[in-house]
Each structure stands twice: as structure tokens, then as C-alpha cells.
Image: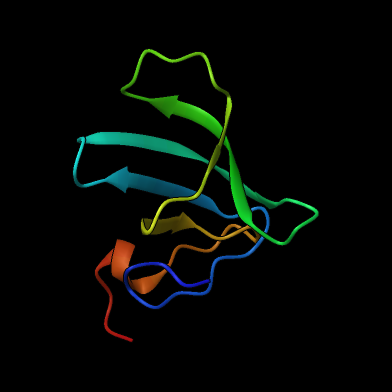
Length: 79
């Protein structure tokens, strides 16, 4: 799976996942379910639900890679 800027999403990446239809957002760390489906441990969100795990949505942005690097589309640097 890739984020909206084409960066590969890997386990341990810190991502922003947003739903354009409902204006809900989630911040969290990616992991993969045994089925291979990308999921996230939610650290912050703007919805009042108590779910701390959620599926990674289709509108997603990698904010920080698992190795600590920051993708160019976040830093604003030319690739």
C-alpha cells in the first residue's frame, strides 16, 4: 500500500489517516493484521469512539517512517 504521495507504507510508520466524507482523522502507528490488511494503533483522533485500533484508510499520509526519517512531502524538500 502507498500513501497519497506514493510513499510505501510499512509496519512501524507513523501516519495520518483521514476520511474525506466524515472529516474524521486518526494519527497512529501502522501494523499489519495476519490477513495482510494495514491497520493502525491510534494515538490521536478527533472522534469520540474508544477504538484504539483501526484500519488504515485510503486517504493516508506517512508523517514519519519507522526508521525515524521524514518523507520529502512532509519536509517540503525536493526529491
